[in-house]
Image (cartoon, rainbow, N blue to C red):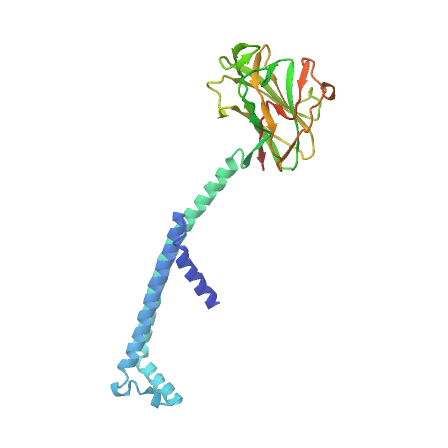
Length: 320
């Protein structure tokens, strides 16, 4: 037990140089100060006993103890103890009192520090409990690279209220929730040999999530009004779409993430090309689906579902 205690104290002395938390550092310093002072008091008591022993021993006998037998040494020590008992005990008792005072002082200091630490811990736990989300955000890329062409016919999608762009995906693990996505920017380039720029005015996009292929029943819907100069961007090619609430996903279920223009709106958005490498979280569609495979809402006359290009360049999911 003593060996273990010494080992702990030694480690504590070393630990003080690696602790960054100010409150913990104060606790360690307070204890080490108590330890040093207590050892000093014990050294003084030990020295007083040595001095008392030397003082009652004839000088000519000092250094000649080896000439004594064990029993004679014991008898002599008993005599010293009797003669010096009152003085030594007095000093020992005084040392006990000093150590007790030091202990009380140390106890007060460390209790205060521990109370401060408890307050910090309570506040930290309270902050965590008050957080809306305690999570890890993951950006899952679906499409890797945008076609550098600026011709809308080859590198874009025209959207209005009757056209729905769809991304079909399947979670590979539980504990995932959909938080948002990366939306490629509005088109600015050439459309049938005429310049066209959809960034000059705001446009509305309605996003929806569906379990299975029934696009008439949605798990979540939210509409965004996007004006390019003001809307948040991930980079120069993508808008940052973050939903007001996260949608929990079930492992092995197929989901359709859809986008279409808001009512009476019409605009073009760029497309992303080239499939990103596989990932451990989401399995994306490996084929294009025909319109007939979806249960389409009444307003839709076209469903665009392409696995190797599209307007869903990445999904933002939460791993909880």
